[in-house]
Image (tube, rainbow, N blue to C red; front, side, top):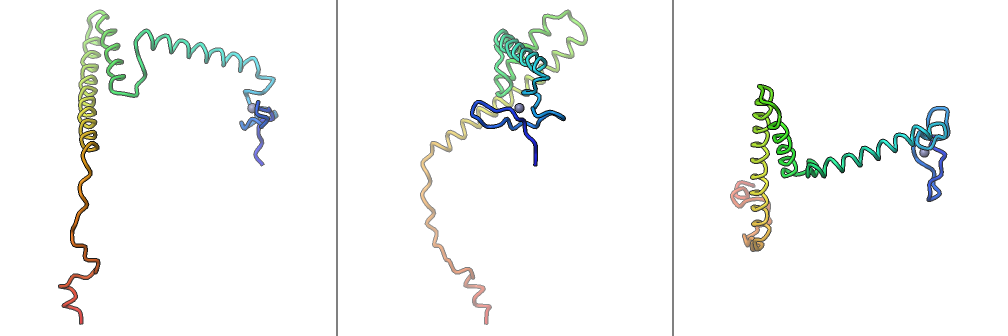
Amino acid sequence: MKRHCQQRLPDGSFCRAAPLKDSEFCLFHSPEHKAEVAEARKLGGLRRRREVAVAGAYDFGGLSTVGDIRRLLEVAVLDTLSLDNSIARARTLAYLAQTALKALQLGEMEERLAALESAVLDREPSPAYDFDLDLDPLDDDVKELLP
Ligand SMILES: [Zn+2]
């Protein structure tokens, strides 16, 4: 049977994490690792706070939309432009411009697709086909050939 951590959770059930070797508890509930876990939690909290602060400073909302990606490219272009002129800076700007062009094309395609989808969805459903449905699987031509 698979072992599980012996820590009881607030709802009375056991923690379902695998226990450490030679321990009844998982890393997060092991009394021997309490200080390390507290430090890790603190670092995690600091990191999340720093992420929120940096995202706010750059008005950056993640990478889930073409608009988000464009914003990241704008930040990268502005930071690169503020550097001293060099071959590396020129190459970086050219690369960012290529990437931005691709993002613009994808954004345009996304908008056109959304417009097409809404046009199709707004259309009245087409009337049912009123073909003469012959449910006999054999054509008349084929039947003539049969004995
Ligand atoms: Zn546990």
